[in-house]
Length: 396
Ligand SMILES: Cc1ncc(COP(=O)(O)O)c(C=O)c1O
Image (cartoon, protein in one colour):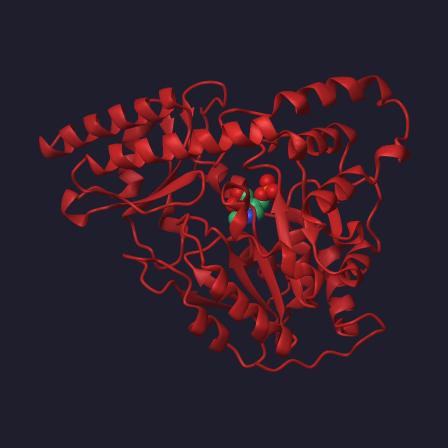
């Protein structure tokens, strides 16, 4: 890989990247930032009432926001009538404190979708392709479309078996990559990329001055696998974190971009200081420090993911992949003669919404994704799946 950057004083930025970023930012006015939730919504039937039925097409923690977060929101409401300068730095400082980082390495956003979109726009272009795994999280591809950036999709090493990132192929995919994007754990598969492989990517991207965007939206389920410590020494590493998954703040919206302070300075230009509102900010600050909530969420995922996986394995023709996150990627064996789209339709009759993964490039019609939810919801799903399976066998 080679790269021709034109430094502008701070390490590793090109003037062109700035203009591309500005152009991208104005293009945002006409093109929406697409997130996984939008893609799930696009499949949602019109009548779907979020308060009824079992919605497992988006990956949400069934515990909801932590008690400490709820209390913090209640406490800040009376102060909502003021400009709260005094809490503005709290989220970056809290996260940086927990991770032992410089607070200037952390830039909060309302979720991680915005910074992901901005980062792809900033560092890719017509001659700087986006290199991404297939299947992988689709939002960066939508961002690339905004600027007409070529997208190089590198198939997972064995989509029907281990389904890991093909690191060697990704590193060799382009002679002038703009961004190498890795989602870890991957979405939709839930499969983890080994730290050793990530460090190989980091070494090469640093050496060849290529941007490495590492999406750690689901890493809180397996935090020891994070590359966050590498941020201190890296110049081209951009890590995205979200509080909308593990910490259950998708409605409140909080996340951040983590990188070296020069990258943060660059991204801070032209951005308003009040990106994350006080409710989300205080909920996020408290969530990060709520050790009881963290332990409960880990315990829930450990038990429920295991029992859901076992339950699925007990239904002939349903093949769940080993996940490290709060969702399961499942293949329907073609001999069942049931596509994920048909399964989805049948489950809607039970008030259950799943994510048909047919939109993921070369997957084909037999894959779907479900969120791991509460015991009650998981059992209801398994019951409905067993019934659908019986109907299929009887040819109904
Ligand atoms: C892998 C991945 N990254 C980023 C996001 C963006 O999430 P948010 O904007 O809610 O932080 C999502 C949403 O589902 C996701 O699945």
